Image (cartoon, rainbow, N blue to C red):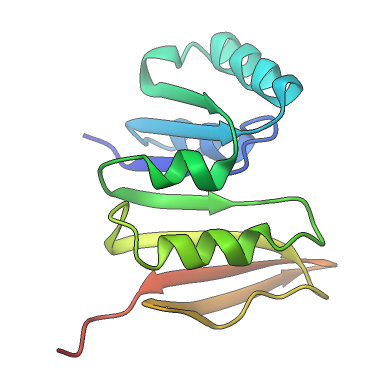
Length: 144
């Protein structure tokens, strides 16, 4: 079975749909915008990946707090300039949807870089592409 992917701020769903195109087995997409959800549904239908995709409309933090099962990849691309990435990383630090192998990828602008650590999550890599940056987080091993 392929990887489980969560696209936390779906937009058009392109990050998560790319995951499916690269062999992921399941995609969960969340967005609060009705227009975004409509676009995601259209894209899912066009690509014929409806059976592998679950779409949730609502506040990403509230929806994700209710999800179960570990994800292999979590994509976080909230509106630039908001505090949503930091708030979601704080939630994910203690969430059961993050396992020891989960990779969290946060897209942000280079002037609004999330902290290096959020509870059990630690930034393991940071890459810059013009004004856009990607920060990669993993759960650190427990020291108890």
